[in-house]
Amino acid sequence: MSAPYLSVVVPAYNESRRLGASLDAILGWLSARGTPGEIVVVDDGSTDGTAEVAESRRGGAWRVRVVRFPANRGKGAAVRAGVRAAEGRLVLVTDADLSTPIEEVDRLIARMRETSSDIVIGSRALPGSKVEVGQPIGRRVMGRGFNRIIRTLTDLPYRDTQCGFKLLDREKVLPIVEKMVVDRFAYDVELLVLARLAGLRILEEPVLWRNSPDSRVAPLRSSWNMFGDVLRLRGRVKRGFYRARAAAGETPSPGAPNSR
Image (cartoon, rainbow, N blue to C red; front, top):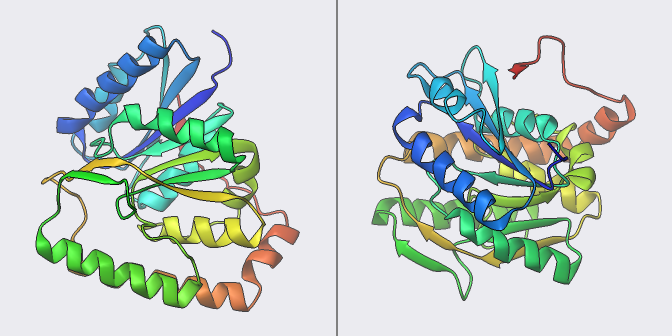
């Protein structure tokens, strides 16, 4: 099998009901395009057979690999493990429910090439974004409020940092990933802050998005946790934590999750 051009990283926690259909959609898209690709599913300590669903898709024309955590660590930790395990030149990070359809990556790849960007982030909040199934009003209000807080605390200019659909140039982004420490949902903010500090080119691109009613995000608790993570991120940047981490050549700790 030739080396993959695109690695699709899918962090998943207790996603056995939705994951199979999403993997079939990704595999169908890869087959239709004929692009050398792979899927890396990161099972974040699931207790419901998520890994078994992913394993059942192995053995076809496209490579499907599973990285397993023995216990739940958080989406940020899962994404880091997936990017490290990926072998493609480009890495797409996408949610297990495919709230943004896999076909939207065609637009992100084209825009990455056109603009020579290193990271292209999908956005639900730009002119041209298409939200076919919206979130409940409470989630929308909290999301907008959180985005304003992020922009105030970090100076990030992006309208939507939390959309779970991001295309990465793996060679450029891997050094950033190795410095990251946020394990929960604010990993997106950490990635973008560190990428901007490193001078990477980031493009925010409108995408199609459909809310899944079976979201794993608890709005109040997750927003509070993300706010705390962003404050700690800001403090780490100010005191030079990430510069020191890079200078020390930090690498993944022993006992990293298994990849098969």
